[in-house]
Image 1 (cartoon, rainbow, N blue to C red):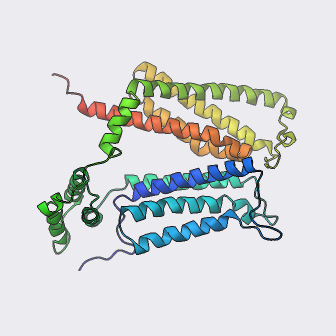
Image 2 (image 1 turned 180 degrees about the vertical axis):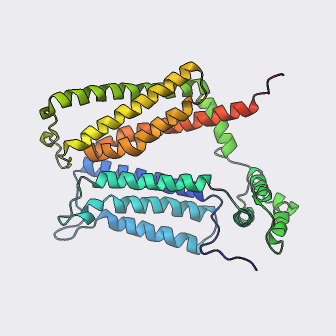
Length: 357
């Protein structure tokens, strides 16, 4: 008896589409805030009529939900993922209005709520990306590859990856349907439907990235990012010492923020400075390990960057609102550099010939 699943199988490329949603979500929020600031926060409508951009977000979400219901294939999924991110971004950008009786768009907790939502989606992406694929899901991946072959969008590399995934996923399904599907995927009929991989295919994209950003340069950029974190920790430590001696200097409520609401509780600023100190200490440990020749320095560097992005920037978005966007973007760039450097280091270890005994 075939066991039925409540929802179904996870999509083979689901992590990639989720990443598209996260990217369009973040870009939409940042772009909306930037546009409204430059335009002076205009009102769409007249008199008592105001068309909030959350309504446009709802329209985008509706289209995103309908597309994969009516059409199959990569294009509908890609467009659905992008529209979903845009829709969520336009909707949650007005979360301050929905949480206050005065419909306050500039409600101080709105910024960390939006940033926290991005973090939760990134966490989901990491979980989906790292999860193991079983035989049931691998068979669905074979079906998806056959659908791409019908559409003329399957490359030889993708076919081989799918075949390998199914063979390594576990025992055959009951009835042998997966074996028959796999035989079709390996047949000459599919050979005639294969297309050449584009310039952004995973292998080609990595080789192009390594030409544009050599490993030596990438490593020095990571050094620079960690050094700036250590410098920030030093300045934050000095700030904490000064504020502990003269707490009257911390007068956030006296800042001229215009329309933006800054929290008037000094505790958030003090917590943020404390997190910067901790992050800087961990970054200093990573640099020390690198100087000592330890291969674990990238693991420690990754911990420093993650603490900054998850805790430090969350506090920064509350204490300084969307002025923290710049440092968050730099943190994401540093995270990408550290992760890519870890991949290059792992690949170099695999390619290195064993030492002679």
